[in-house]
Length: 154
Image (cartoon, rainbow, N blue to C red; front, side, top):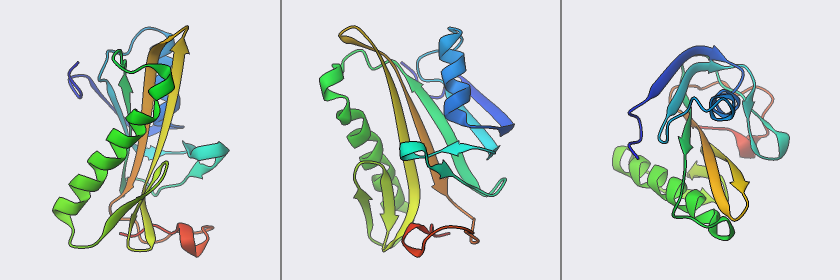
């Protein structure tokens, strides 16, 4: 597996997870494929929530993996690895406390900076694939229609 060897860059898409899912269904996604969009019109969050983002101001992407070494009963290990990797990176570039609100949110101080949505597909007792969607706020400062506890930070 080589993450990022195949990168698909889109100007606009409904959801990078939806796009990646279609690639997988059509057997067009290699293990490690990254789908990145400058704007998602219908970004997905947990439990049917929407991940909204201004065009060109955030990192919105999905990663397709075939985690052959992970058994379905231990699927949460993927969430752990992704969340910890994002935290480690953020801690290297900002001088503030970064923490994980399990299972899928990354906070800096009291404000959410990143959301993660992992959609797993199993075939029998094996993983078929995992699609890992990540929305990371970078430059957005206006967050309409969000409760104060859900606001992201620039």
